[in-house]
Image (cartoon, rainbow, N blue to C red; front, side, top):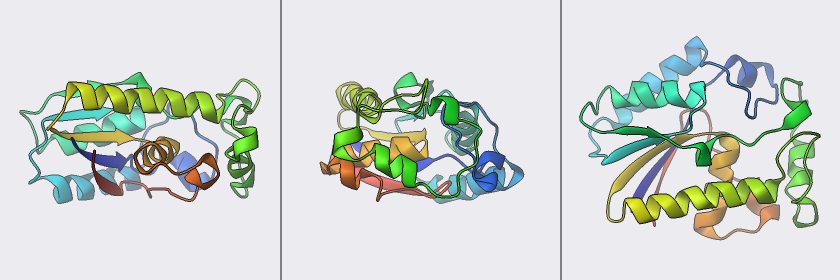
Length: 180
């Protein structure tokens, strides 16, 4: 399977440096412009399916990209929802050190109050990747998802340990291609 992974466009939460997680926020005007630019970059690729997180910021990004692929089905998958940061959602962060700390191997079963532990989140995302590989072998798949999801996909594909998973991050509307 050829997988193109795109992170959603920018949101006001991204601009304000707020933990977003599973909070369903829309793209900002900048995010819409980023999605249009990415759509132009990907317009000539023959996708067999477009898969998206069901959260609005990813769905909108996927819809904008899909404008150039009108014959390609778009499906939504909860496997690729962003990680829940629980009580941290909507809070400002000055740095990402707490999230990095949660990704250390000894802490992967911990989470912010009412949030999702990294290990459980990784298992969910990995099950989604395995499902894509089963459903779309030898196909070209566009997946529109989130920052933490991109880290877990990169971890699954490249086999990096949890402690290194946070060193990878796609910028808003950046994409990467994997052969898996």
